[in-house]
Image (tube, rainbow, N blue to C red):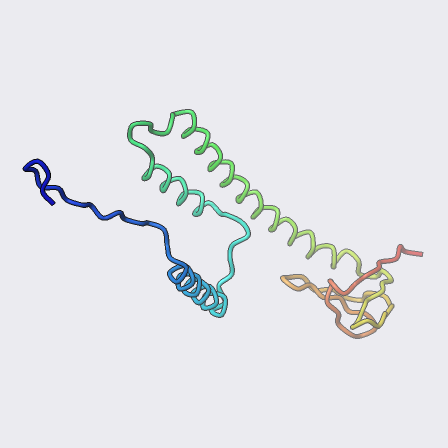
Length: 158
């Protein structure tokens, strides 16, 4: 169109809103992908570890606004949180090892004591005559071996 000697152009109006058909197709694709993920046995994490924390920190630093970078105090605080996380993980491993040692020795310390064992819902009682150590400690009662975790009650010496 030509007005006052100037060429006029009409600019088409772009719409960024999805049509109902596009929304339905997208929802179907998302549902299909989610079903494939669940069928493959992938389960979402319930806890974040140190690798996840570092990934988030790197992503934050990569995508920060260059005109307003992360302040020093924020960065130091995040690094302190990361250090605390590493220390907590190390403590957890130490506690697991300590728990294993205590569990191993507790089975050995009850040799000669009268106990009750739950064997598939049936209570069995007797005196422990022997015990093993290791990942799955066992106790011998009345000539039969039971897992230490099956012992429900330990009685004091008479």
